[in-house]
Length: 361
Image (cartoon, rainbow, N blue to C red; front, top):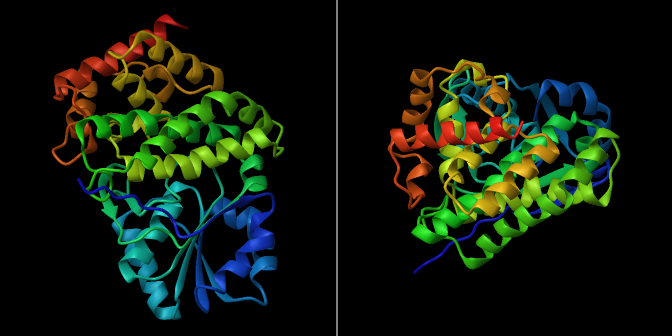
């Protein structure tokens, strides 16, 4: 059996990493950079970015339009061509990063990712999730290579609202369980081939780090300070989770997340918050001790354990079946599971996970 793992070319994480490292790193990759910045990154980080880049590399700034859509990608590609850009830098949250990666992948340009949140495992991957302009899941865009650089400034992450860090833990929580599904079924990872044992070990390590340091990391973020526990969880949310899902594989939890996007009421909730519900649903018939462990973890850090906590307090069975049907789309990752998969089983799992969450309140 041939196995495959994929990694970013370089990963840098630490206090004030933008000021101290970004400019030095970009000069290795090209001569003129497009900085695709989220509105909040542009507001809060322009000074640090200018300090790091000026005198090192020529650059222009464009503000991300809030949705990783084919239309936004096409808009930015036109800017790149007009301005003779040769490096794409995404600075912001998951959708900003995915858009920058999609632009770089389409043009085969170097890609640098500077996440301002530890809210998803998107930064390290050769994958962009494409949505419609109104926020519904559309497709996965598999890129030919991973980012050339992922640079995480832990001071920036610490100063972001704690909800983002917690959402990142929700995304990372799924990594081991989904990788295990793929290992047991010998399903392909994001390359189409099975992952190596190192990928599954990293996914398990991600889970262990969350359990050990998650609560402490949340407390540090609430105080807007950088501590070793916060550094560990940032790494788990960003690097370990990214390597775990991309080289280990995706399964049920992320497919259920994709299903939730069909309901507009969920659009105000973060990716990792919906993935957490997907993880609880995929585990609902698992070992009772593990179910208890995962519910306790979610409760301890503030992740959703009920549908009401992702905007679906009064969701009808009809709408919940729409979620289940979309989650079971023919080419989605849910089919990497050995479990019986159809809209009825997924519908039942979501309802059961919600009932368990409600009973614990």
